Amino acid sequence: MKRTISAALMLALGTGPALAETADNNIEQQLKEYEQRLQRLEQQELDGAINEEQRITINGFLSAGMSQADAPTETGNASYVDGSGKDWSHDSLTRAGVQFNAKINEKAQAVVQLFASGEDDFDAEIQWGYLDYEITESVSAKAGRIVAPFYMHSQYVDVGYAYPWVTPPAEVYLLAPVKTMEGMELAWSFATGPVFHRVSGFWGSSTVDGGARTSNAQFQADDLSGINLTSRWNDWTFRAAYSGASVTVPQDDLDMLIPATALGLSIDDVYTYFAGAGLQFDNGSWFFATEVAQLSFGNWYPSSESGYVTAGKYLGKWMPLVTWAAVYPKKLDDDLPQALNDGLAERQKSWTGGLRYSLTDSIALKGEYSYYYDFAEEDVSTTGFFVTDSPLKDDHASVVRLSVDLVF
Image 1 (cartoon, rainbow, N blue to C red):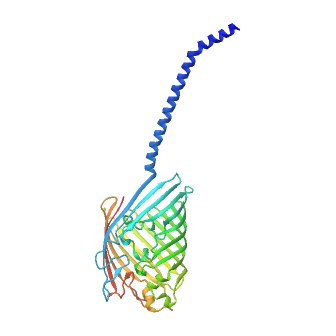
Image 2 (cartoon, rainbow, N blue to C red):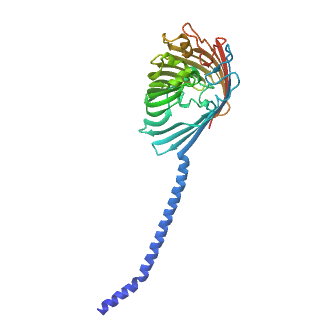
Image 3 (tube, rainbow, N blue to C red):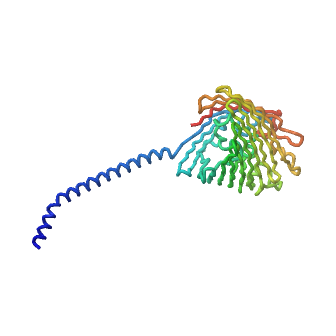
């Protein structure tokens, strides 16, 4: 037994230094692992900071302009629906917007756009605010405050740099002056041979300010739903849209416009539809665009149809263009007093000559002169889109507009 104990003691003493050396190696290995972990964490923080900058993108636009109308009436002067009056005005054509796109993951992003205009005393508002989710590579969905996709240029109707006019033709774009809606949209993108298509359906609601020509009556559009198709082939773009809604106007707003209560008239859950189609060609040498639209109320309120045709030529940095546009009353209620139909109906034609100069890749200078005429016909006599308490002195009027538009 003594030999066994001695042997064990000798064995323990003999292996002591080896065990100590092994322990030191383990500590060094652990220290190296800790250092590597620390480096990885620091790198992740750095990558996170970089990714945070890449995750949020910011874009914006700004337009600064002025306009003046020459529209004498029997008692003074009329102003155009866009705010142009006898004196030079800067408010109606001055606006700005900033858009934030925040990437949530590979499929989702949040989009918020702030917008302010001189027409609204530069009170900033959240014009857009929605979640954009990519369901598949060809199907996407939006939910929140989104663009109301009525027109060919609805997506960027406030971005003056994006189109050749100072403002898009009012005969079409102010027929149903709805820009945004609260709701959802489902879109499908696909191709048929060389033609690329995008079909979208939407549903929601919107409160639309009818503007000065309706004494700023508020049109509440509930169950606003519709479908639109955009097709692109080479330099051509085609678009068609249809939407319908249940429209209500507060009786007090309606009484500010006409003696509605006295006449027993109201607009309460009236089915109203909008239909439009457009075609555009732009090959960098020539520009051509046309749109037609129709707004129809299912009651006594006058319905309208309108359209425009624009042709322009690129000459280096210059682009002269000419536009013809018109709006007509489509249906009048014969049971209404003639004076009421005259006041509510919209009829006019116009010729507009414009010139655009591309100062840089993101700044454009524009000017245009619009001549308006043919406000009356056998069944109705109107002042078109001019706001006045008395008839126009002549059957014509004009508006001059100048602007500088930029994107950043």
